[in-house]
Each structure stands twice: as C-alpha cells, then as structure tokens.
Amino acid sequence: MRDLSQWTGRPEPNLLSIEGRFVQIDRAQFPRDAEALFAAIGGPGNDDLWRYIPFGPFENAAALGAGMVLVAQRQHWMTYIFRKPETGDVLGMSNYMRIRPEAGSAEIGCIVLSKALQRTPAATEAMYLLARHLFDDLGYRRYEWKCHDGNEASKRAAVRLGFSFEGVFRQDMVVKSKNRNTAWYSIIDSEWPDMREAFEIWLAPANFDNAGQQKRPLQDIRELL
Image (cartoon, rainbow, N blue to C red; front, top):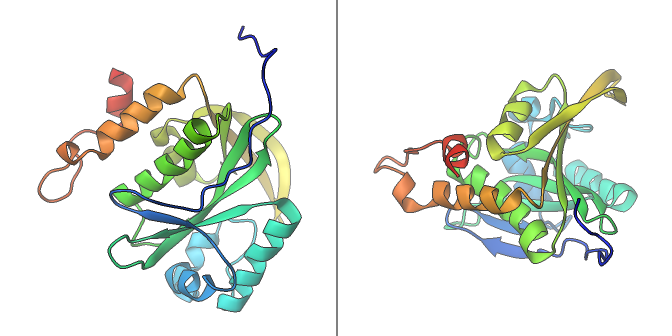
C-alpha cells in the first residue's frame, strides 16, 4: 500500500484555456458564452442531448446561462466550453464537479456535446486534455465519471476512455421526477501514465487515414501498453 504520510491537498482546477490538435477548451464565462453555447446545444432540435442531464433543456440562452451560474454557486461546478480551433465556434461543454482538493479527486460530468462534436477526435481530445490537467498539472489521485445507469452511451464512453467500473448506487437521486441509479467509474493516478500514452498515440496524425478515420481504436492501443 502506498505511503501517504507526505500527502498534501492539491490545488483546485485552474485551467483557463488550452488548444489541442482538434479542440480548444476555454473556461466558460456567463452570460458572455450563453448565446453561443445555446446555439450549439440548445433549442428543440437538441432536447435529446439533455435527457440524462439533471436540469434542462432550457428555453433560451439566458436560461441556460442562469442555470450554469446557479450550479457553479451552489455546487462549485467549473464549466468548460469546447470550440473548433480554426473558427472559435462553440461545440459543447463539460464540467469539473465534486471537486475535492483535499482528497485530490474530481469528477467530469454534465457533458453535453453538439451533434457536430459527437464521435469525433475533438471529443476524445477534450476528455484527454481535461484529465491531463488534473493528473499532470495538479497531481490529483482520482478522476470520476458518473452517469444514469440507463445511459448506455455514457457507460460505453466511460469504458472507451479508460475509466474502470466501480458499481451502481441504487436509488441514488431523483432527477426530473424519476429515480436515478448511478453508475460510478474512475481513473486513478497509478493508471494514468498508460492512459496518457494511449491517448497520445491515438491522437497522433499517424493514427488517422486521409479521410480522418482512426486506424486503431483507443481501447486496442491501451490494451497493448
């Protein structure tokens, strides 16, 4: 068992902006970013994106911005906006949640990706960059992913990204007047070096053909390491 006698708490996440090969990530500012974010993930055509999110969908940009401000104030969420690097167009968002600097632990959640961002290298790179900030920049020990146990897409995404399934909390929450059983996943710091290498190999130009399609899946690369 690791000796933690010298362990000290870590800083809170402090990422302001970072640009990768496929995506730019910026700390959200509301109401400034509300209009662009709503254009990407709001409106009737995007109601399905909010099915498993604890709040929303929102009627307009002002309501979306007010909702994100409220969870930041009440639950200390940190919202990040995903953008297309070439144009700055907003493509979606995610949040650092359940931030516990004293334990070196945080959750990634309330991930709402536009249809243009789903199943793209940019989406994977965004998840990699946010994880890297916690583990490499701040020295966190644990990174969590939680979702409604009925959200099969989210559970598949967690496994693909390298999170380990930890179990289901039964009757964990009441969300939108319905029961939520919550599936828990995590990555811990001892696993991160191999995870990071797998992400970097997957994201490298050599792993994509001329049509932009992956040559080797992320999970296959991780299993080889």
